Image (cartoon, rainbow, N blue to C red; front, top):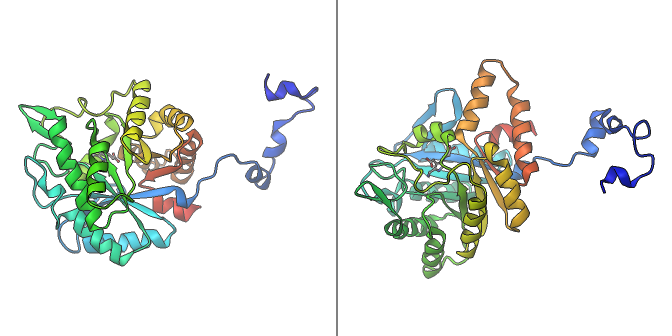
Length: 331
Ligand code: PBG
């Protein structure tokens, strides 16, 4: 029985749903979903050098910054009320293994040390992956043109531990190798980081919407694509298995990525798992609205707030978005 049927006479003209839509204050009062600046994570890209700031054309929040300017940006974001950033590194040089990912003075490690000092309260989430550090641009070890799962686990675990040592607050593996959460959990625990949470990119799809990011992170694969490890977009039951397995391996929170084309996956994960659910509003989603707004085809602020609210309404607790600073100002 629907709620409407439970009340006798609860139909038009007795019932008029427009009554609570009449004024802004009434709408505000009965609003079911609210965005809060505390829900947002701001992605940041760190590159070598000093005084470096390279924005992607027209996508002004996707910027490579050297450590000094990264600190300024993080400080500004924190002053606006943003509590967490997600760090990606662009190393000086790349190699077959992606050794820049776990070097003690690697780019992310240096950024972590500087940020912990400059903005101590800011939550530092690090993306753990090899693709920005490997010469071939894949997220794991390559042998004979194949991405080899088990050999990659040790490298990912080393990367996670080096981030922990440099001051990361949350470790977020995004590589999609099987077993990586367990490998990372074991390595962190063995090194005394049993209190450090793992946010697993559990349901990460092989998506066309990562285009601008790969340019910003210099991480496009040099051959093939990521479909042998990232998920096939049509699958949702498999996404639930990914989530289940990652939780069993010790994940503390789950991420669905991308967000807007996968709201059903966000909702399903929300319904099934009582852990924090993150959704990543990715670079291609950002680019679409940015470009439309640049042409005057839609109002950026309204379209962004509507999209991010939809991600929350679907069930996400936390949203990773390039609009974090704008939203902080708009709210
Ligand atoms: C991989 C990674 C990617 C993104 C975050 N981490 C890209 C990929 O899998 O190719 C995409 C983020 C975005 O598009 O905003 N480490």
